Image (cartoon, rainbow, N blue to C red; front, side, top):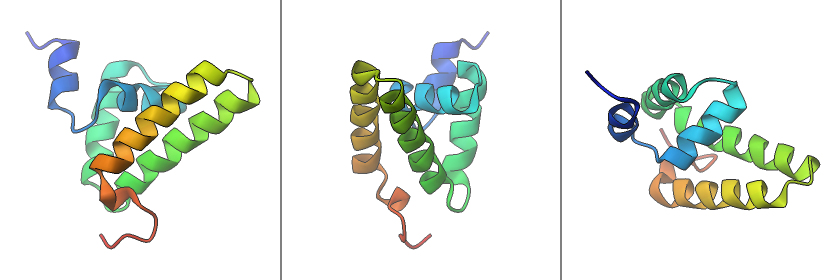
Length: 92
């Protein structure tokens, strides 16, 4: 049987990036991993992932949850370093 770890490993994003999507979309981890995989193969999907992570950073800052905002920012930096197609205005 396939485990949650196996599903995370099949996704092109890290666990922190998947967790940010889960938080944004109010989904369990397995559904967020599936959504992340779908978005990474969809036109402008990588930009949507970037926007989701940014939204969660803003939400954490509004709650004055600095440790979580820092963790999300680190996930965003890692994501942007590995997925240049997520830069707004990037060609598909």
